[in-house]
Image 1 (cartoon, rainbow, N blue to C red):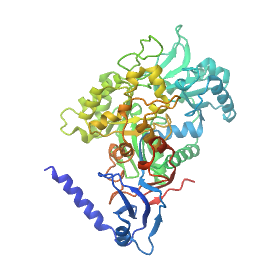
Image 2: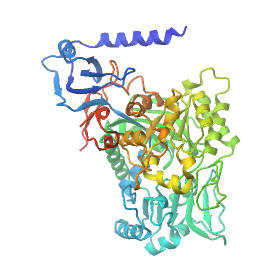
Image 3: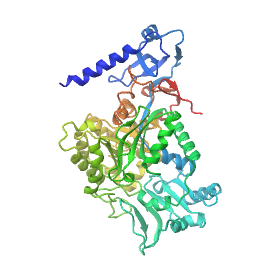
Image 4: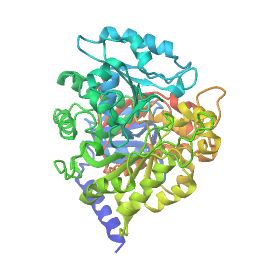
Length: 568
């Protein structure tokens, strides 16, 4: 009976092709390489679109003869490259919109690194934009990318910026924040306050005094509850701008991994539904409900609710923190500071994460778990083994592990056996590779981060992502990073060359394999007859470009459903 799914698929494709009106394509592309990313990785000469779907791929003569009509728009690529629209499997659209669109963006992915003085200057300059009664909210400080290494904010530093305006600054990882004493006062957090559950920590010094450092999002909640919320117009405008920014990188589908992390699941889901009802989104969105925001027995949104433009498909949990922030849960201590015994901490006990995730797994939700450290990966794989117990086809659930940063070979093999599809924050290698290798975890563990090579050798799928606002959205950047594995800080070095992959493998990780990961490979991810005409036009063909230079290729146009996206 194994032939039945394949036979049904062939019949559906035949019915789809039969429903198209031959000789009347809306658009035909030719005049440049058309990279299909089909099973054979073929390049073709021409592609035809009708009613938002791809109706033909092949030679120019065959496609134009069969599909061109008097009203067909014929586009000569003039040597530019046409590819499937990129699929970004892990972003935080609303969080990035709030931090970068409405707050103070302190992220610095360039050289030289910031110092405490330059960060202080930027924050003081940002005070002018804070309205009366408002907070200075910022994002993007990163001790592992600050000079001197691991120089960090605290309440004393922030009080020098302002003692009157409450300040809340989130670390680049998203797993750490820093506040001044005015913010502590308004939030009601004192030296006697116990840390919140689910991994939250109000960091205190040896004398039990608050330092102004917060660890993990549960510790942010008392502060967020006191911050003035943006107006509806401000929030919708920032989200729209962020979606446009994502589309400008050639992304046509993105997964929002934290629906509910800011204002609650129902409110944030309603925001996205409103945006899509107005038909103003330039991208498709797949939504993952924020596990920590879900009450027991939640069922207001059903698994797979939505349509091909907006669909809610998963529930996401956070099992540990950030590797570069020294909060990811490792099996062995960090290498920094010297002789430390600290190895990070899990956000949940084993029984807790199982009891939280099982009801949603049983409802049919895809489960996604953030796991940076190898201890967290162990916990996640063990949890998935229990969830999948008795399931003869575990791969059909497409369970996800986000980041999979510090790992070992046995974990890769176990993940593959369970059908787990990991998604790598490949910018870890670029922006933090030197810090991992030389300071934080040492060269032996560092060379294995983001083990794309191992998954490829086992014939398994994996994807690449930005985790924005942790790093910037840029699929072409991911290709360069995954293929070269070069870190940014001079002198550049390839981190774990054994885990490098080919350009074609990296392309699949940001197209068809990413579509597979989010249950959308039947409609997007490759240029094949019957699929949606989600396309990107590139200045050059990445398959013919030096891997290190792929990141510099310009995105010329983004198309969704056969229509060019306007990013104005």
